[in-house]
Image (cartoon, rainbow, N blue to C red; front, side, top):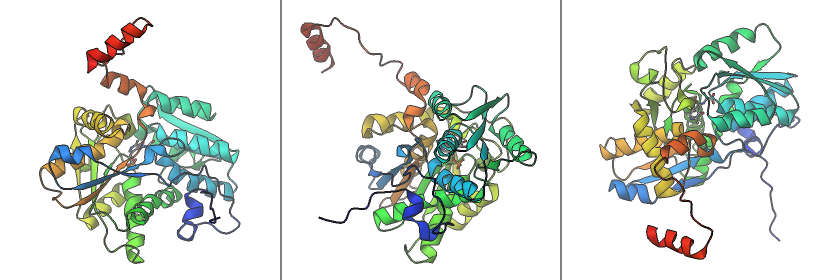
Length: 359
Ligand code: F0G
C-alpha cells in the first residue's frame, strides 16, 4: 500500500515558509490546494494561441481566497492569546473570519456596509455565528472604524493590514508554481483592497529568490470602472459597482500594490459592470465555472489584453477566480432573467415536448 498523507491545510503544507513553530496550534479548515483549471473553449473563441489557467479559489472552505490569509491570521491571533477578532468587509473576509473564529472557539466581530453585501456571504456569516455590525457607510469607512476601535477594545484586526494575512495568501503563488512546474508569464487578478496582489507578488518573489521558479509573472490588476483608484492614480470617495466584493475606493495596500505593478512591469485597468458580468457568464456557459462577479474581472481583463496583443500569443496566463458564484445568487438570477425555467405538466408527453422544443 502506498503511504497516504491526509491533506491538512496550507500552513501544514508550507510550514517552512510560514511563521509557525512546531508547537503552534494550527487553526485550519484544510483550505488551499485549489484546482488550476485550463480553459478550453474561451481561448478558442478568442482565436488566440494562449494557455489560460484559472486558479479557482471559490473552492476554499468558505468559498473564497480569504481562507488562505485567515488560517494564518487566526492561528497567530490565538497563539498570541487573543479572544476576539474584528474586520471590515465587503462580505468574503467577514465570512472567512467568522468561520475560523468558530473553529478556534473565539469571537468574531464584522463590520459590513449595510445592504451592500451578497446574500450568500451574509447567510454564511450568520451561520458561523459572528456578531455582525452593519454600518451606513461603505467598506472604506468600516476599515477606518476598525482601525480606531482596535485601540480601544481587546480585538485583533484580521483585515489584510494584518501581515499574517498576506503570508497565508502568498501560498496561492506557491501552489501555482508547484502545480505548473513554472511561474506563468502573466498573472491576472481583481484588485480591491489590494491585499491579494501584494500577497501573490510576495509569494512569487520568495520562490524566485530561492530559485524554485526562474521568472516572476507580469502582474495585471483589474478593477471595476466605478471603483478604480489604481487606474485613477488616487483614492476615490464613492466607489460603486455591481461587483460588491471590490467596491473599494481607499485600498489599504496601496504602496505594496504599486510596487508589484512596477517591479513586474505590469499594469492596472478597469472594466464596466457590463464587461465584468459578461465575463462571469462566459465562464459559466462555456467552461462550467461559476465565480462571483468580482472574480470575473480577472478574465474580463485577460480577454481584453489578449485580444489587443498586450498579452502576446504563446503566453501562459493564470487568472485568479477569487470567490464562488453561489455567494451572490441575486446577481446570478438577474444575469439569467431571460432563461426562466419552463413549468409543464408532470407527464411524459409534456417532458418530451419540452426537450424536443429545445433541440
Ligand atoms: N475578489 C473577491 C471575491 C473579494 O472578496 C475581494 C476582496 C477581492 C477580489 C479583492 O481582493 O481586496 O485583496 O484586492 N474582498 C474583501 C472582503 C475586501 O472584505 O471580503 P483584495
